[in-house]
Length: 309
Image (cartoon, rainbow, N blue to C red; front, top):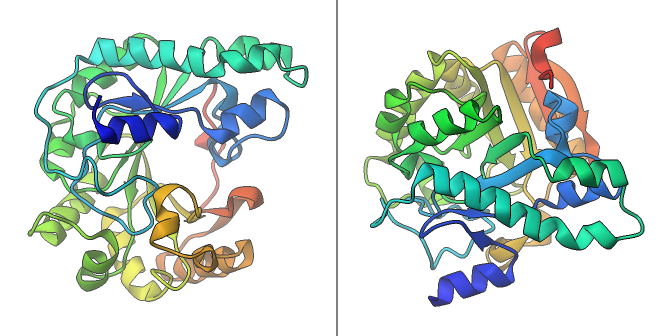
């Protein structure tokens, strides 16, 4: 096992192939222990205790300053070997069950929620890396939906052609918007692809026409990217999303070596930043999750925002 894998396994990752992995989200544990549910439950109705946080690709062409992964590993344009989609799913489910097994004997667990957690219903394809770098992403989505899982897919937009080729769309698609301009994107996301801005803007255009639930996500980092609301607004208008999330950066993982705890914005700061952007794009705050410092914007709230399970 290489050094990178050893380090990541110590951090709680479990590899489900050569380049795919799964990790238990802290909110999944919280839910089973009745300590609260994640913002995705509040915003979209996802069952936190039945969510698999995973990625089919540890590889990423960006080196974002706020990323929780070690940038010394898996920074690349692509991968050498290609994991089988069915095996990724099977291995993710097995690893999830193994990682949660310790809660089975916890006296504080909710017995029913723990039982439910053994039968996941949702895949959050957002753990780390860039999922669209995985060439068999479409087959992965087909297999997930065939097995009746819902799927949330997060992309950084560096592979617009991969988005364009998707015939099986995720239940919900996220496009990360980390900076309001080409110059600030280069400084914050540190892309290794020279035509990064062209790729990102092409992804915004493709994203705007995709027939699924669509979210623009801004990871708000105080002192780093919480400025130029007009620049954000112009990019969001191009994407024409159903929702915009403004969610606080978390001072976790290797990002602690690159940033300071002061870079974590307060909930009030996230609220005001979201409000300022909302005024420019014709959206308003429709929901919040204070513990995650997350704010949800939309033109109007609708009954179908929360998925039915």
